[in-house]
Amino acid sequence: MSRKGLSAHWNEFFFAPRSPLPIALFRILYGALVCATVLLLRRDWLVWYGPYGLISPETMSQMEPGVRINIFHLLPSGDAWIEAVFWVLLGSAICLCAGFLTRISSVVVFVCLTSLNERNLIITHSGDTFLRVTGFFLMFAPAGACLSVDHLIRVRARKEGRVPKPRAPWAQRMIQFELSLLYFTAAYSKALGEPWLSGAALYYIYHLEDLRRFPLPQWFYNPTVLALGGWGAMILEFTLGTLIWIRAIRYYILAAGLMLHLVLEYSLNIPLFQWEVLSAYVLFIDPRDLMRVMARARLLVKERLFRSPRTTHSRLPAMRSRGPSRKTSNHP
Amino acid sequence: MTPMPRAVNKRGPNVRGSTPPRWRRLAINVFIVAHIFIVSCWAIPISSSWRLAVRNFVTPYMRWTGLFQAWDMFSPVPKNANSYVEAIIHYQDGNTRTWAFPRMSHLDVWERYSKERYRKYGDLLEVTPALWPDAALFAARQNNNRAVPIKTVFLVRYCAPIALQGEVAQRSESCDDDVLYSRPIHAGDLK
Image 1 (tube, each protein chain N blue to C red):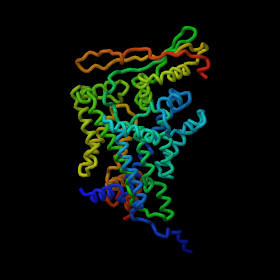
Image 2: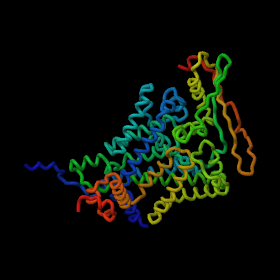
Image 3: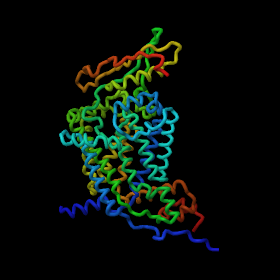
């Protein structure tokens, strides 16, 4: 490929305007997952982040030195300030979810989330890391361009049409890159470990008592099944990290990834990690397909929630053939 | 009376797509290339000297921005033992009390989900001596509810290796029941 061709492809990939629907949907899921994360931490908030908790600020600073984003360093000591961080983070995550003051909310969420991670890196798992690094790129994305209060305000002020204008997707691409990197690195790291190559790794993992979640059938613990599962997971992670970029087979790969994460969510007690990773899958879905799914979901919701005859008749012509709703309709 | 039309943006609703101006696009390109390169060098555990050099060079930036990341989930070698840490509190009158961090296998499904951070913490507590003084102090604070003051806190690790089918579990130095740490407690410590 010539340099010009490469440059054109690069520009097309990162800058050709595209629908902001996927990134807006990701923003909603992201905000909801941040809310869930902080709510799960709520009961032990001061244990993890308080001055008299399990890890003092001094110990953390000694273990992880360097200049870092950590608002806890700037706050006066005292439980009330630690509690305030919880409410600020929760509030800004709700705003981000709703798409209200989206840019500011995304910055506040990122700063607070990073501060939590830095204050106690010991309890940070891969899901937190994924939220943090995707949160960094989300700050640059047009995440409030649609499905947001911000967009509604702009439409009412006639600064923008109802249909959101396409935007350069470079920040969305960076989040996609992070997801791809996560899978590729996970597969690569596993390939470096003898237990993964010999097939023993999953045997160990599924015999860790503290990781168990819901009960599994006895055949699942068979060493051969677990060995096949481990190798399959490695291959699938490698596939998700590389072939996900090929449009023709993308949906099959995403479906396989979804199955993998659902099995892990059922069987292993790793809170929210699977959902955090899955949330980024929407960035790989064609906006037209997303709109189709959303339209269908909207119809279903309307059908379920607003079963008034008028709605059934005038808004859902496709449902006319269904006897009961037509019969009960007052309109001819 | 007809309502007054609302003010409309002079350019009208912009439905055309927008791309950044040339200078901004250049800056974004530099940002993209730099981040793809440094994040890859940081995350992918290739053992090469140039990667380590890049990693060392960008460490302050990665720490500062919060972009540091590792995706080595259960790899390269997953944990192969069931273990946990308990605190044994000795009081001045000779009595003792055992205090355990929440253990996932003793909790119901919902509690396990919300308390999972204790599992992560416990795994690292076993192998990170820097955490032991704070953990002992925390256990002392949790148990400072008797008239008799606390004399010493011990952190004890219990470990049972997982044996592969057909093999016999073998204890090793890294998986043995052991006193990790002891700390005398003074009145001033529990303020």
